[in-house]
Length: 206
Image (cartoon, rainbow, N blue to C red; front, top):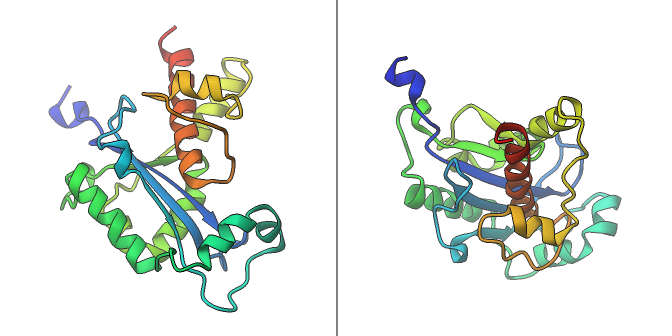
């Protein structure tokens, strides 16, 4: 086997975003979160450097009725002075990758892989709004949803329950998850990492 065939992924860049609408063609980003791990799902940076950013909503900019109802707290944060612009968010994420994943790499094969649940949706908006971030990533995606389908269809097992905090902390390297918080980007990343660890242990190590 050649050296090229043996080469491992340099890092996984776990990314999740909340959007102004489920209509991706017209949606904008509301919140982005990033954690970088190695291929064993261990953080490559301190927890204090996890990124969790609210994106500034311009005055009069609307969100969908579903988002207004279910993510009202996040929407309020995005209208506050603590929110950052898309350009600022892009710079923060790029700086995190440069510091902990060694980016940018000239060769696309050396770049870290974007990871998450149904991460193609996040990738779609990332490509539109976060160009510095996108330029530092591999063309491949690691989608935990793919492993979930195999877990249910091939192994015949029930899906990982990310509402169970005890299970999350058992599977998430280092634990430390206080509560389930669906539709929060940083929580969703941690849940995705825990979920992949759960499936990998069941599918590949038993």
